[in-house]
Length: 354
Image 1 (cartoon, rainbow, N blue to C red):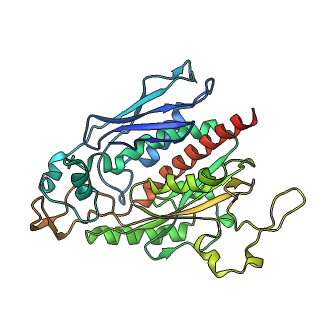
Image 2: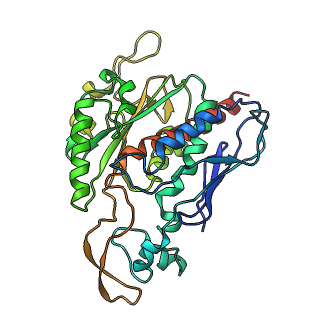
Image 3: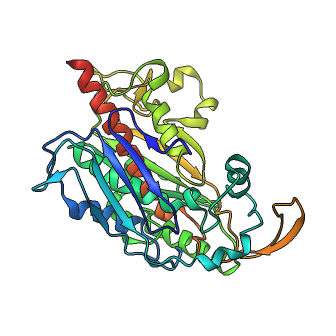
């Protein structure tokens, strides 16, 4: 199975399965001498871990990261950083009913067709548990990007949408509620809706908005390695993501060019930011902001019809511990992937200046 490595210079390779002994990764390309706050790394993992509230999966995992290489006396050595997160609360028997059948809208069928074999326990490599390794790497990338602020939050759950521009939101409210929405009133509505959906044995999707501030001018390479292209790839690599838009996004098609163009101030900043902080694939120093759309979780705790390995129609029932809505736990994942892209392009820009 290929495709387990992300990045050009700041690279992350992940390993492990949802119900294996451990998941983890190797970070290659992190510069030497970076003093790491390991508590901050663990804090990012705690934001992603399961079982943190009534609206997330009740799988209980401490998600404690252990580092095995690349660190000495609290600093990076420039060598590969190896780490692992041990799985302690697997319930593989919850998946025995799908050993010979496929869950609709999961990776089950295509994995079996492509590889002729699949780990049906929690989805194996296709499980969102793999993203914990990304959060570790992203937490380190954040510390490399000193001065850069990356903040994601939930802006929509189902049809409940936060319309307030991000500039007017109080980001200090994000971690004050289990939904991770910066508007307390909207957060309460979203939480109630997720709980209702959960009682129905169903799931719902949503949108995570991310804002990156204090980005230097010049990140991104023309043509195929545009900054927004790499951000798009990073977001679309996250489980359950169905859409990515930056800046004005799809709303920009309704505007005229004279309305959409970002006029310049004398210092090179712009009067508006419909470009989303990126022009010609290169950061222009303005805030980078984008939306990431997540589909409803495919596993619904209801009866459904599917097919087995023989192509026969069979009936099945959703089981196990699953999130009724992934977006609250996806917030730190979106931040992590953003940090990985920005760190990678920061290193590329530094090389190009030599």
